Length: 312
Image 1: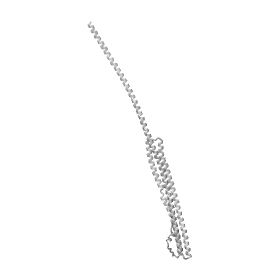
Image 2 (image 1 turned 90 degrees about the vertical axis):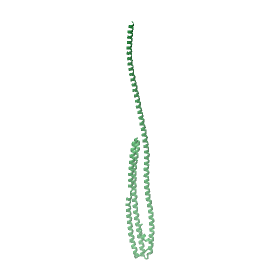
Image 3 (image 1 turned 60 degrees about the vertical axis):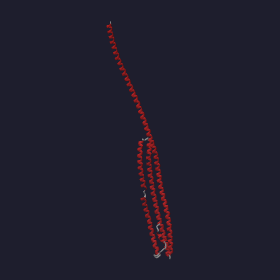
Image 4 (image 1 turned 120 degrees about the horizontal axis):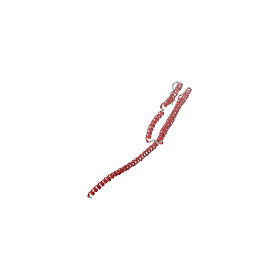
């Protein structure tokens, strides 16, 4: 009986041990499966979390990129606005300066022409005064000659001499006056032509100048970038400088009238000299006839004798 109980007890122990082993193995497998499931779930959560974070980062990048782009656009717009405002002010100032420069040069030319007219008036008044003085001196000379005359022949010779000299004086003066008028008219025509040429140069310069200026405004109206505006402004300045220098050179060359004036001076001088030579020849003949009437002896105690041949 005791032996049976012992055997039975052993058998029970063995059975229980087997069940325990079986139970422990099953538990381990279940736990392993559970762990794997949890690991899979955790990895899935991590993956989802990474994807979510990635999406947020990408969204943030896009947002930041858009903000940077918008900021750049705002800065660019502001730069363009500032540059265009500055350009418009500069262009307006340049147009005003060009207009004032033209008005100033035109006024200078008008003042110069006015000065020429004033100088002519002064010279004419001076010449008139000199001629009046010479007329008085010749009259005094004629009176002195009449005082020396003793015979009718001598009186007649004095009157003939006076008539010839006065006619020669009038002829000489008329020739000189005509040469002066022709000279002045030629000078006036030359100056007027130069004035017209200069005005044409100013017109063409202003037209091209304003076209260049307006190109900046057109660039601003077309929303040109600031970098392109800088290039346009640089090219514009270079082109305007070139045009300005060329314009100044052309104006200076056009204003040079000295050689042409000198030619006119030479023509007048020759005409005046011809009138003087003719006058002297006439006076010499008249003087010879007068001396013959006085038998070659004629002395007048006056400085007025020399004035008979005066060339004014």
